[in-house]
Length: 272
Image (cartoon, rainbow, N blue to C red):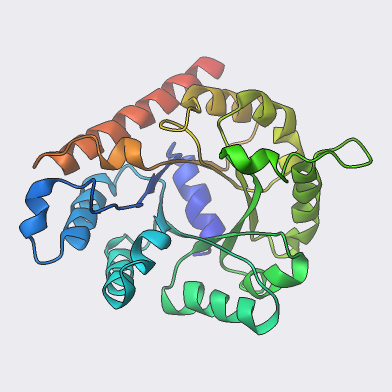
């Protein structure tokens, strides 16, 4: 099953929430500090409690790489826990030239066996081609992000009146010859999403920024439904992972995910 097929299957089931595994040892329940491997035990409990309701899992590599060899082992073992029919996104924001990019692609797709990755297009198409050559995988390419610094470059006005991020979207549509490109588009500003959603074409979209960063889930759903599009993922990390700091953390995470799915379903039913 290709990465795109995994995503579409979950979307057809009415699942659009991606659980972000940005696991921070300073935020997990204190009682886990006595465990032999607190991070892995936390991740395993979260995955086991949410796997039937999650559309995907996004693993932020930085939260694991910082711990060196042990962190990379936790990363690998966390990936092994996730069901094979669920999309695994490596949030690594890779993008470099020549053999460097090729090695990054081999790491993410061949070694860690992730289904998808986040990429930075700043260095152009050739910096992403080693990833795009993996036809069964999915590449979510940064366009408009949800951080304040998005105004530094992404929202620069070009001579033709477009923003730079809009030119990037157009390029990604051109690069999608293997049907394995997607977009990362911040959900913090619903008006920008509504204005640009038609330009996404058939590209799957990963949307950070809902919840702790201020984006509204209902606004995202309405924007895509209005454009008659349904291939997207809304990433939520802290809002699911840390609903409780006690021994019921996994149960509370599951309850939050179920509630989010109900909210999505409610909006979808209203639009029909």
